[in-house]
Amino acid sequence: MSRVMEPAHTFLPSEWKHANRVHFRSAETERARSERLAAECKRLIEESEKSAKRMQQDANQRLEHRIKDIKFWRQELDQKLQEVVQEIEVLITFKNRVERALESCSEPLKATLDCLNERQKRVAIDLVSDEVERELLKEKDVIEGVITLLQRTLEQIIEQIRMSLKKMLSWWQQMLQNASESRGIYGYWGNKGGVTIRLSFYGHMLCFLNCHLAAHMKYASERVDEFEYILDSQTFQGKKASSILDHKVVFWFGDLNFRIEDHGMHFIRNCITSKNFNLMWSKDQLTVMKKNVPKLQQFEEGPLDFQPTYKFDLNSDNYDSRVQKAWFGLTGKKRKPAWCDRILWRVKPRPPPPEDIFEEGDDDAAKEKKKNLLEDLMEKYPLKVVQDSYTSSMEYGVSDHKPVIGMFRLELRKMYDIPLVRLHAEGDWSADLDAMVTYSPLQPFPSSAWDWIGLYKVGFRSISDYITYTWVKDDQVAFNDEVVQVYVSKEEIPVVGGDCVLCYYSSNLQCIVGISEPFKVHESRAAIEEGLLPENINGLDQAIAS
Image 1 (cartoon, helix red, strand yellow):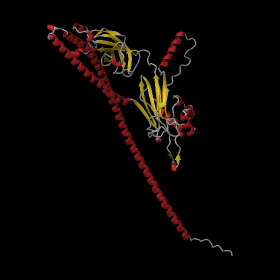
Image 2: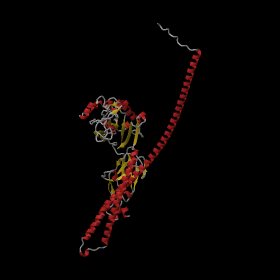
Image 3: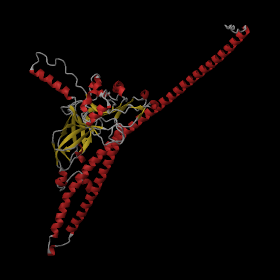
Image 4: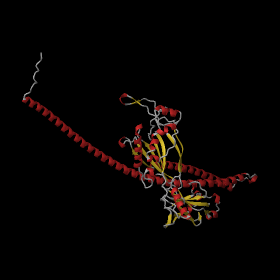
């Protein structure tokens, strides 16, 4: 029998209204809760903004104070460095004088000992202990005492010079200009990025750029972007070589993290075992990227004739053998060996020669002049950078990388064809009269109050071999637009005399920029008249006698 379906339950209007009121109150409650949540979020945002601004202001203030402190300490460091340089120069001068004094004592001592030996050869009644012998013995004791004192003084001077040099080098390391750029998490974390240091080498600016770029196989393009960003963002003070690529030579090195693509683990390890490293070069990411990136093409690198330097087990020569843990307890892949650690270099390109430098109708003189101008232009640039070796060192095991070592020879062309300063000794020189030096700059160069003129024996071998020196600014007595005269005290001129030259030393360029023609320093007439032997005299005799 068919079953009759029961009709659906119906509600009364009052029940419908009651259900709607319940839903409405529930919705109102949710809306109020949402509004309270939105208001709380807005309040938290405002408080976070205020806190962030307050922290930023505090950080800016601390940075300003830090910058002021750095500037102040840099000035103090400059002053201390100048004082130490001056102290060392004075010590070296004193050292040279003490050494000459020691040399001068040898002849009088030898003469005294010879006299005593001859007197000991007397026989019989002639063997008399008279006043002459007592004076000779006294002279011997005095000379030996002076020699002992001078030797002890010389040892103290050398020790003081060593300590001053150590202190100066400690300060000098802080004076080298450097720059850094963080490229880690969000561009702020310092686990990735670049650090640059630059210096002047015989007047040529060299730059050393150390980078730690992004890791992992798939980020080759990001590594190049980071490298280009570092090149563009790091700057130095001064007009000379204000950016990295402005330097004459740039050495780029570090954990660059470029990997070997496509080749599998088995193929790479077979190539390493058989030392067929060249089979992996074509898939090296840095080699591949250099074909398409202009800035990379400016850098050179030696052949990778050594096994990849990454990744090793710690304290081992075995490549990565540990099981890598991945997400959700899965086992990850071992790292493939790669040349992550590299050393490259770049020589600043020479500017292109002028177009059509030789024109039709130029005579031989014009062509020669233009040729000389072109050669002068070429002289401003390094001759060549030669890499003598490029290898890795397997004995270090404290890291999962092996260090890479590159040995270079850097040959630089001379910066100037002619001396920057012309020097001349005015009149006759001797220890009897004060002397005068005349010099005139032949080319513009960065002169300094710390420049000095030294008096040297002909044939000197080192800058520190000077007999005496005078400051070009402190002892300046007269000057005009072309010629400057500098005073030299007679007390500083050697009594013995001899063939000498004058040399102008530039503190900024750290080299001699001018040498005079050889001239004669005459023996002191006053010393000769007093009966002093010229070969036994030096500038310290008067001080010792007094």
